[in-house]
Image (cartoon, rainbow, N blue to C red; front, top):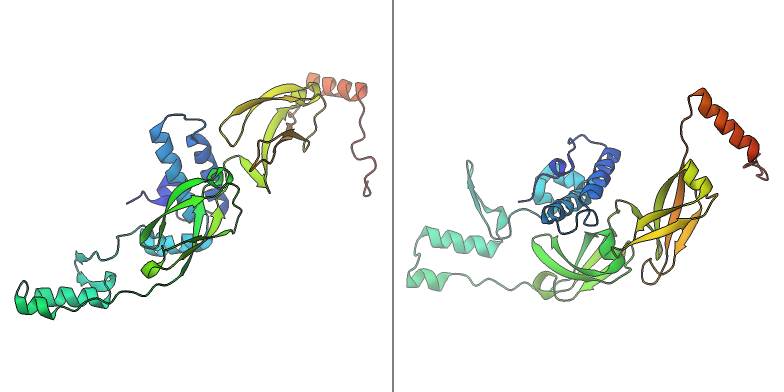
Length: 292
């Protein structure tokens, strides 16, 4: 059985949505494969963090988990298992045919010809289509790949096409009840630092004031695992974007979005220097705005 999801994220059961998201982002960044190449322990922790957030980051799934534990997430005991505890036998995991067979076997004639001949033959379930929802990792949705999911009481292997979008409905032929089809509505989990706009990938890149003013070079990650050096031109402002052609989803682009971090100037000399800079390079950033 997996670890308690609250324990995985290092939060209490009363944690707010923001606290859950903050804990997830911190741990996803810490254990991300890009930062821990070849580290199997970090890879396992990263998967635990993803699974924990998939259940606690969704209000409905979190409510089911809080009420039923792993049984509410489909991670509990498989079908046909039974439990002897302080209250006796729990038949909830059996259908009527299963339960009848067990009672007849333990009630007499077990192993005898008569007992064997009287066992009921379980009727085969008719094929039915089934609807379900599934959370998939951000990078799997972007790049495509095969993943294993637990839907109800069964494990499902699914091939995810590259570039699949939020809310996409996929059909898995023959994997529903009785051999029917399983329809999965996909929900894409957030990434620790990448964002998506259509087939474009966005990455925030903080810059110091001198870096933004004078220009610099910054090494950045891409969704395919590469790290590229990007030249930031002098005078880059917060919100400006630089394009990495073809580094997005399915031939789209990746954009580096500049975030200028302004220092807090508290000493006299610092104020003097900032004042000199303002005098040398005067600006009117609000000029032309309708509300200014």
